[in-house]
Length: 251
Image 1 (cartoon, rainbow, N blue to C red):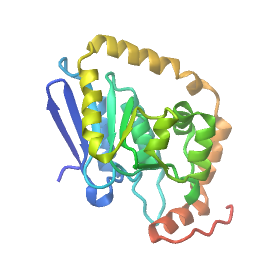
Image 2: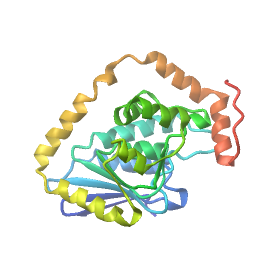
Image 3: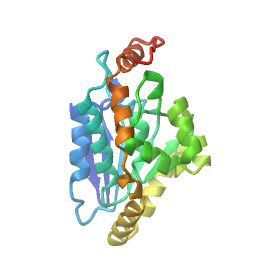
């Protein structure tokens, strides 16, 4: 079974996460599939891509094991988010269920998010002794602003899509029954636009938010590396997998 389904209907391409039995958790195969899908040059007739998922969850984040998260996966997920964000045409995330950790980042790296208002968005990385890197933290700041970034990253508790919409973080938040219609209306509006104009606008927007990419963050990168290499990181991930409270030692 393919972990990623790609379908095209006229101006609209649909990319579907297809790992429902694992809550669409991001393993290497799925991440490489998404990179390939969004690194491709859009055909002339395309106007918009929809990112959706099968099963009850949108995406539960990176695949976890009692061994923690390896450095390769952390690098790969960052590259995947960057590839999706820089796709030349608009990308709409349809979020029908939980978007947690990497799943939350996945949705927020799309240009528009249409969500079930009850769907939880969460970044519980600190709860398992981990952290986002410079670029993923920057994306949360860019999208959410400092107060909400603090809540999402330092507390890590899930926030319903309805609240995120009220704060202007996502484009649409409606009832589950209305989600398809709201998503289709958004897609239809985008599909009716001129592709060259949309490409130019998206390129300008990305360029204007890239300033912080060039700030030196060597010291911050060292803190991130320290967190990932610590025993606390292994303990936190193991506790999550084993569904127990972690015992952090600050080392």
